Image 1: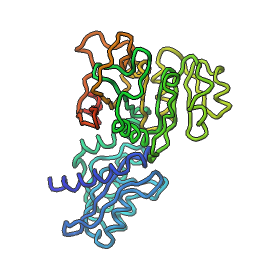
Image 2: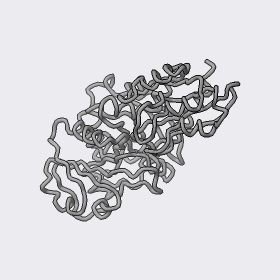
Image 3: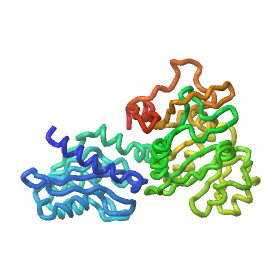
Image 4: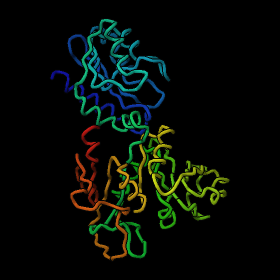
Length: 364
């Protein structure tokens, strides 16, 4: 198809906004002049800022008149934090809009394309649609389900251990792998750990160096028993801390220091309850870092969408040494979760396996 190459360029532009635009979608745009030559490009760069179409049209200037706008998502047609892109497109004199997909956001949902057609602008939809849906899978999930996109992450030895029999775990993976984790943290809305991780590792759960987002540090503690002295509590004023617990009265000291305490019911359905609450906050991406109990609960609930697994060429051994995913698990190997659209790459001495659950690989 004649537009596919330009659309893939627009998709690559859109990717530059990841971590900076959520809960808005990632969007990229390319303008071709009336002769079909490149005239300008742009992408949505930050939440609340101008949309991709505005940047691309500004870059094209008068060359946009009579030309084609290629954009990864249906242009908006409502007044939000910025004016409607459909108005800017009409004013620029664009004669054709090629969109990868329509925007299911209720205030758009086909209305932008209808406005463009009503203005006499030719509209094509569906070019590279599968790629566009993969690009904006977290946005689409939040919109359709009210739940954020869940990233599951762990580092383990070659024999599948996340700690020794004594609980020691620092460091299984090397510096290059840990840097990728920090980059992931820097584009998340929340980072989730269980009580055991706070006790064993005393983590900060921050991105170093900082990324485009400052994630909320989220702790799941059914008992409400957390250390009086730890780095999360000491830095609660520097980055948000949210604690989900069935015993909120035990965390009055944390609350006084500035942590947000959210009561949840235990044990049934706590994963969905937490994700529902994070979705109401319009969190788009959350990273579950462990430990084994929390990762097991997330996997038992079929709540994970994307996996980031770091495998170190080390053998730890020990029947009592923890594996990454606890919980109930599956009864047969045939029932095991098999990732799709996965790839493996070396990072220093380690391997990084990145993949998606089948439902996400198929529908993202």
